[in-house]
Length: 72
Image (cartoon, rainbow, N blue to C red; front, side, top):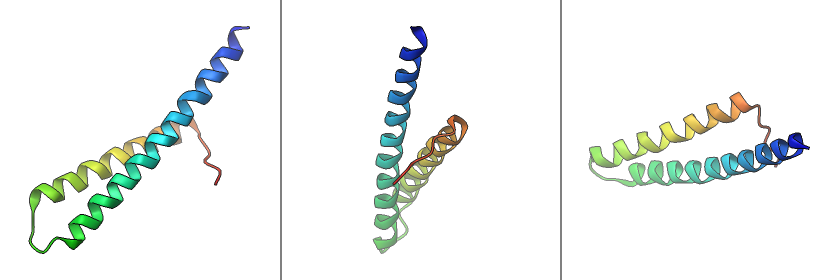
């Protein structure tokens, strides 16, 4: 009885994690592209890119710990 709810919660949170990973990767790629298009060396853009990259890799590590397989 209680285990069914646990499985559903795990699936829900795994879906949220996958969704967050997709959004974070898109944000990272957008920042990376913006940094490449930048003519001068702007440290603010560089730092924002590094923060977005760190967030993505953090979520990727969490997905690896949870053993989530993304099927596309």
